[in-house]
Image 1 (cartoon, rainbow, N blue to C red):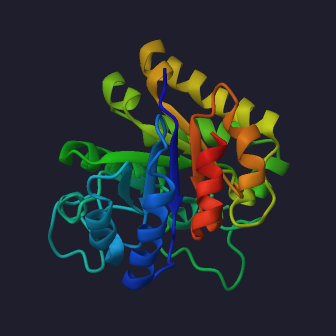
Image 2: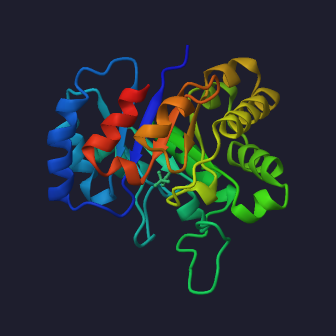
Length: 263
Ligand code: PEP
């Protein structure tokens, strides 16, 4: 039985003070929630503050990214060891915004890939996180243009195969994969429930092919993309959707609590 996992990705939102206020209100609201793993993914600067305030609660903390080297001359980057030291237990890897894939379009004029992540860097980051004891949540998903061209399945299968390359079945079985159609992120345009279930089942089948049935049955697969309190219940009741990665609706306590309680 896979434990559902709901993560709130705050992206570049909330100062340390705002994060503190959120956690103070949020932890009371979810204190009675059992059998759901709850994660907050604050910006790096607030990870320590949030982790301190979540100590002894049912809320864990995740980074939004991690670098693939242990230390050194990598200006602006944050290592797995630093995240663990600040109190994080998980980290997102390969979010579409770090892959440089935005909204409904691939990059258009005026948009810049601020990290231009590739499947190869995603794979390096996952390996470094696992080696350090940080649990990775690997994001994958197709853009609007890729979906329109009928390439959804091949794009996602490629991201799964390359992102998880060289890992063991045991490592993959302990991981979380987030299916996030890029066109549904922050747009209010949610993927239909049957289609989200179909793609999540396809990801599980791909993992079964690459790593075996045991890994496929234990890996947790989240859906992400405009999840709100009013669509969460239907999405989260699907057999291959084991939770949600939530952006905008995780910024307000009542909205995020509504999603968690929908499960
Ligand atoms: C996300 O950023 O991972 C996300 C799913 O955002 P939103 O919920 O706002 O679509």
